[in-house]
Amino acid sequence: MRLPLILTAAALALSGCVYQNPGAMPPVAPTLPPVAVPNPDAAVRSSARLIVNREMARRLPGANVAPYTDCVLNNATTAELADISQSANASGAVASIVGRPATTQCIAGAAAAARGTA
Image 1 (cartoon, helix red, strand yellow):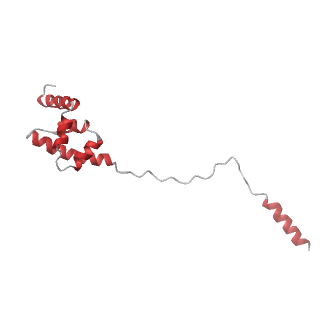
Image 2 (image 1 turned 120 degrees about the vertical axis):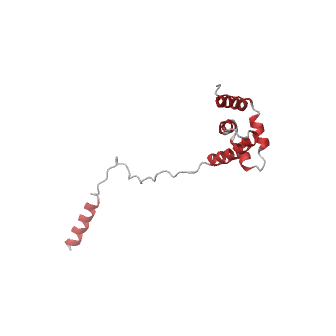
Image 3 (image 1 turned 60 degrees about the horizontal axis):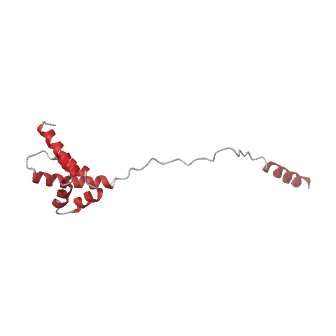
C-alpha cells in the first residue's frame, strides 16, 4: 500500500518542477507582408487626365497639351477631378480650373517653355 502513496507524492513533487521564465517574451505570431491597396485617387486622377487631355486638345489643336493638362490637374481638387472623370461634359469644369490665377500662370510658363522663351 505504500506504492500508491509514494507515486502520489512523487507526482505532486514533480508537478512543481515545470520551468517558468517570468521575464521571457511570449512567442510572436509571424506577420504577413503588407497588401498593396489600390489608390482610388490615382484612378480618379488617371481618368481625369484622359478627359482633360481631350478637352485641352480640342481647345489647342496640334499642340502638345500634356504640360497644360498637368497644370489643370495640379490646380484641381480631388473632388473636382472626380467630377471631371464622371462628367459627360467636363468643359465647364476644366474652364473653371483654367481660369484660376495659379493655373493661368502655370499654363503661361508651360507655353513659354514650349516656345523656348522660358
